Amino acid sequence: MKKYNNRAIILASGAGARSGLKIPKQFALINGRTVLERGIDAFENHDGIDEIILVSAPQYLEKCKKIVSKNKYKKVIKIIPGGKTRQQSAYAGISEVENPRANILIHDAARPFVTARIITDCINALKKYKAAGTAVPSADTIIKINKNNTVESVLERGSLMRCQTPQAFKLEIIKKAHELALKNNLASVTDDCGLVLRFKLAPVYVVPGDDSNIKITYPADILTAQNICRARDKQK
Picture 1: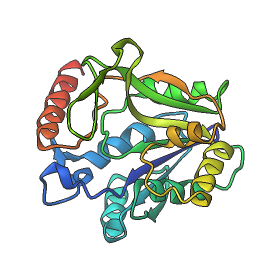
Picture 2: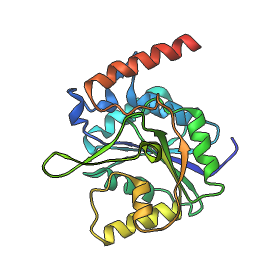
Picture 3: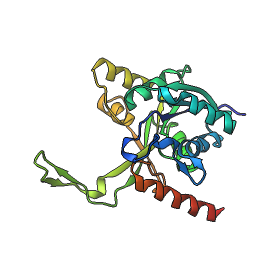
């Protein structure tokens, strides 16, 4: 297998409290396969990805190991415990990458339908840029409210997009961003591109996402995911 030096870090350590499920949402079944499996599949089957680092909540490490073993994933080289926040989990995964010239793709396990095209576009973006995010246009008008829960302003929809993952980085850039966050006592930032921009380390290129690349968050998202699966099955 040709080496491209592209590592995927899949964050599967969230509790999924808003999903209404008794288990973390990454372990929910969608048409017979877990959300996590469907996410790993996309990177495992992509020719441009060399290795996968899976970040899990400590109490679910064994469950993740069983999933990896059952599927005989060859690219999952490490399964490590995450932290209490997404930021800590992302940094834990980043810290496991030793090659300073590596490209890093950070992906939320709760997004089971990332496409091969998105992964390819993220990898290609790093040929020119040091950081890239995935996003789709906002179909809704976005408003800004104040502390009294009244509208402060209506934002121009044409310049707004909804962020997705994966987000892609040169290792040196994203590692420096997380180290600066630690140094400045920033502990709850939920977006890696946001860290890069906060410390003005590099421009962030935007890769077109996909409306099917949903994040499982609420109970209704499971139903949406099942419908996406059915639609994809019909296309095969």
